[in-house]
Amino acid sequence: MALSENDMKEFLSQLQETDAVLGETAQKRVREYHRLNGIPFETYKFPTYKSAEEQKVWVHHWWVRPLRFLYRHLPRAIRSRIKRVAT
Image 1 (cartoon, rainbow, N blue to C red):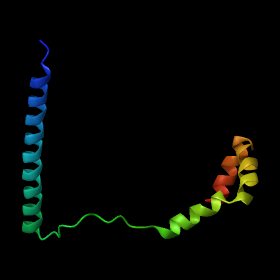
Image 2: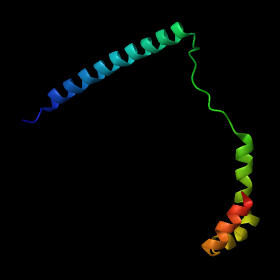
Image 3: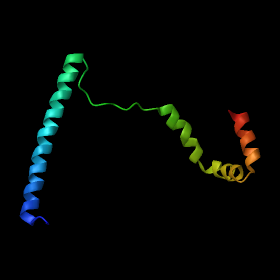
Image 4: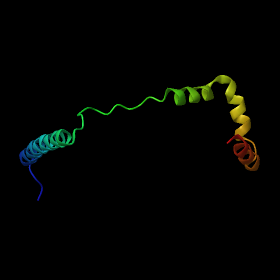
């Protein structure tokens, strides 16, 4: 039996209320856990790896494109030997 539109709206509103209550409960648990274990409650800050970013940037310069083209069109055996020597 299909639900009527009003029944569906009522069901969705109940789900939203339940979700809100569960979200508040989860946040309280996390704060309590952090407080008990001495963990500062902060958002995670992702580290910036500037050196890695700077190393990647040169690959996209105009003068590297012909080299990449030549390298990609070499036979696989030669490419693998180049990789072994380079690493």
